[in-house]
Image (cartoon, rainbow, N blue to C red; front, side, top):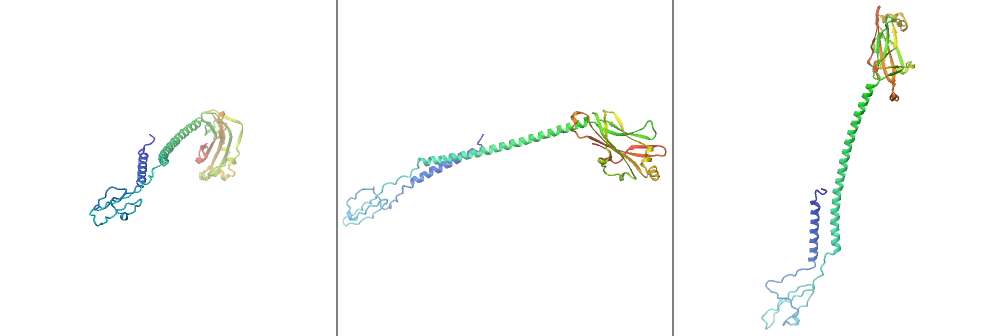
Amino acid sequence: MILRPAWFPVSLLAIALTAGIAGAQQSTTAGHPTTQPADATHPQPAAISAPTSVHPAQTAPAQPQTSVAEPPLAQDNVSTQQPQIIVTGPPPATNSWQLHERVAWAASIVLAVLGYVGIILALRALNAIKRSNEASLETARAAMGVADALLGQTKALLEFERPWILVHIDPSLTAENSFKVMASNRGRRPARITHLADQVHMVADESELPATLDYDSMDMQEQEEPVILLPGESIAIARFTRTDIAQICKTEEQMRRVATWQEIIYLFGRVTYCDVSPSSADVSPYLTDWCCRYIHGETKSALIVGGPQSYNRHI
């Protein structure tokens, strides 16, 4: 299981053993020089230690470490050849493979095999760590996805359960050509109105209205006694009547332009409210922006929700 390529270190050990044995044999045979054979036409007898019937002056001196073949000497009354004398020296000392050299060689082989095994184990450990890290990363990503989904569900639930104040226009039942701007709680929790603001603009066309309104510069009327609206309840936050045109228009010319629809009166404002539950104490207040358009008639007037989309929003 650990050494899948186990044949490699076994082959390495076998090659090293074969090389060591071959080196030992070569070192052993290196100390034994070979003797050149004599000529085939002159047979050589066995080596002797003393000459037989040979004159001392005709005998060659013996030289160690060499083999000398003496040519036959011609004598007057002798018809036979004299035997050759071969002198051999003592055998050289054998260069044997010492024990400590064998131990060192075996130790080097064992260390090489152990090093290879250690490298394989280290690589396997690194691969296991890498796979574990990748699995942990995937688990963390899955956990983050689940957390994001739960957070989205929680936000959706809070948005569903929060109070929602919407603005609509109701005609007055007691006065003709009089209108009330009503704020209604359409959410599932009670709402507490903290600030109110409203303003009037008179322009020739809707496109002449400011792109954005600076509600911070308006006179935000803080409610001395905060109004609490239960789900489904409504309250009037502004009123507008036909007689208010005289206060908005400074001259008769402006009155005529409003009556002929050359100029349009826009009434807009903002409602600031919050949730009354203790858990929402640290939550930012909610905002509802609203805008209405006044339509002047000869005898009847109307006030409808209108204006740019940026003037009618819920935050």
